[in-house]
Image 1 (cartoon, rainbow, N blue to C red):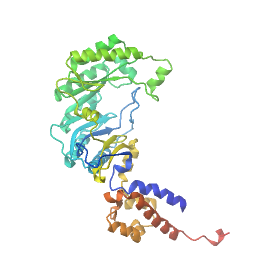
Image 2: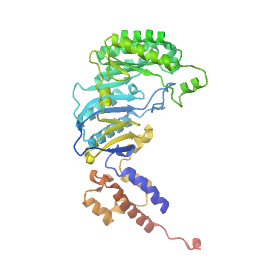
Image 3: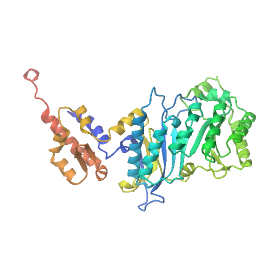
Image 4: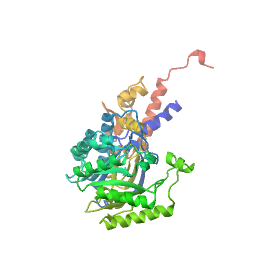
Length: 419
């Protein structure tokens, strides 16, 4: 009996939240002023698409290489989490949306359209709000750009990384320089003035001269927005192991510093504004989403491993929460599906007893329902928003009821087993 009750405690803590999203995140809270913070009802939205076709040699992001993707289920879960966090935050205006990953250009345009529609239904999203999609510049990615625009995307961030085929092979990328250039051209045709290109420096075999030449080529095809990223060797990646074993070598810190200074001068000369460490924009092409992070504005992250920072006004707005969603996609989707104890899931756990019969005859549970703290109906068992704030005091009541019932239902030992 003791083991069964101990097993129930995390189950109840996980599943009696009022709706999905809250139970799939690690949460840290920091007290805020009793007055509502500036722009308390505004936030940007980040959507994490965790899937890729392959893992790049340098990447340690939260990404997965699945045999197949259930696009319908993934869409439903992303929509569900969006609704939940918008309700919890009480955000009424989304200032920008960013689809990142992973490789979000592997998502179906219908998924993008569904998410944008969900946001628009539950919060204000102006027609000219920045909606960005990260794109892997493969032929397949290029072919779907027009469909993504029709779905609501109005800005592309192209993960070019390099215009040197040898460097792209070292990085494990699944495109070549020509394909990147073709994708950039198509993106700029569809979203003029709203295309960003990612390029990396400090790569194996790269010199200051080759880097400067590559940057010139980048500027000849994309002069809206450039993001410069110095290669970081992350533990656990194949590139880290190759460098550690001496199979590859990267430029020294002094050389990479020279590369960065050289790029800054060249971009400044070309009329770019450096508005943060890695990002440069020309002709007012500054990313509203990036600016929001740097100004410490609220942001909501949905999807496996996504991070959020906002004040949950639905819970009184006395804490600012930093949330990291469950990392692994299958677990994340499973948890979203079990956002409450449904009758169906309860039967899987305990087929010998009906959930309504177990808790419906408990006077303490009945009192919690009368106070509006607990809901037990045909859909299952869950807390109200007010009840969630008192979850630690509600759980012992539920567990005691279950322990009493299991004790009553436990069969008496047969005479043969009595000492």
